[in-house]
Image (cartoon, rainbow, N blue to C red; front, side, top):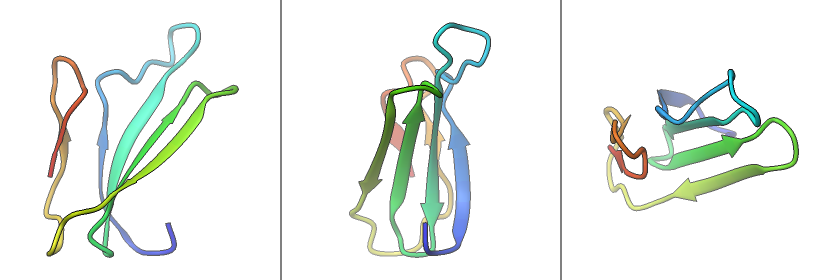
Length: 72
């Protein structure tokens, strides 16, 4: 990150009891950016920086059914 992490939200897609496992979470940081991290703990590792906030991020949450949207 390089900056203080203020929040974290785990995606409902996160599964360690499946093959391949899926780890997906999003963090908010003091630089007013979100970072989305996805991994299968093997070959697939994705890292995306989501920008657009003009002020600090007070919270974040994944949409609970499909996990394709993040509200912040």
